[in-house]
Amino acid sequence: MGINLSVNIAGVIWKNPVTVASGTFGSGKEYAEYFDVSKLGAITTKGVSPTPWPGNNVPRIAETYGGMLNSIGLQNPGVEAFVNDDMPFLREQNSVVIVNVCGHRIEEYCTIARRLTEIKGVDMLELNISCPNVSEGGMAFGTNWKMTEKVVAAVRKVTDLPIIAKLSPNVTDIDVIAKAAEGAGANALSMINTLMGMKIDIHSRRPLLANRVGGLSGPAIRPVAVRCVYQVAGCVKIPIIGMGGISTGDDAIEFILAGASAVAVGTANFTNPQAALDVIAGIEQYMTQHNVADINELVGAAL
Image 1 (cartoon, one colour):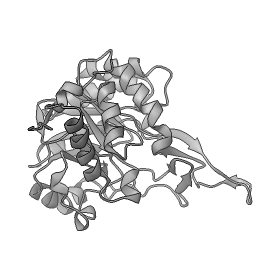
Image 2 (cartoon, helix red, strand yellow):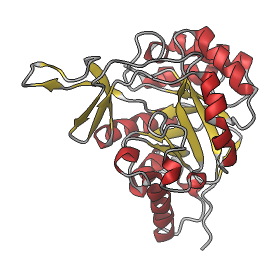
Image 3 (tube, helix red, strand yellow):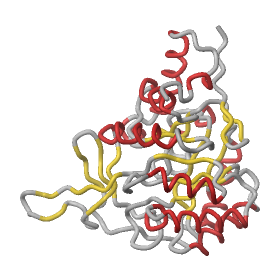
Image 4 (cartoon, one colour):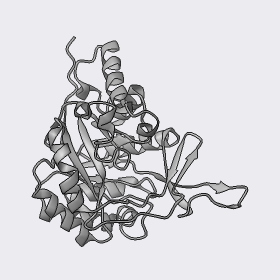
């Protein structure tokens, strides 16, 4: 039986429904030492800002049961370094390129969007309006529907690239945020970013992270992420890229049945560099076992 894994995300065709979560994969060059990253449906880059960001103080990583906490703070060398150092490699890959963009103010998101629109090889923009580890911008835009609407609408005016809004689970009603992003011109949604968490060192009696709180990711948050995708899929018409604790094909299928058209592998990349390939293989195995010819037949089947 022939199997179709290709999906259409906001008019962009991915050869399979698997990408990587921003901040867990760099821009792919390091992982290319372990596997052919062109086998991914899409490569989602680390967060890119207008100017270099130093990130938060260390320690900024902590292991937890079923996942990890991070408070990296979107450290990156800025958009020009990204264009010069990372884009040549990304252009050589036969995969969709999604650039995650971040800023302290709406004007900064617009500045990056304009710049990246000029760059050959950038296929989609993912607006990081949900990072919990920066003092300005980030989650401040993604936990208030009016701010979500403003930043998405502003970026929509300066680029013709498809816009993916990355949503935070740290809200009372994610439906409202999702609808605001869709109404303002987002072409797809990424769901979800990390949950707010903390770990305390019982010996020093102090928070383990220098930033005190961080973003919880990994298998521990998967049930929350699946619920968010399921909930939002019932109220928006744009595609959803599901993420949150995915490490196997079965995990990915769960998100797809909940309404995701594609998925992203994040924390699993740190323990298994080939996790995304394992997920692709697992999806194919599931489809073969259940006589499913087209991955799109499964999208939202549990709704």
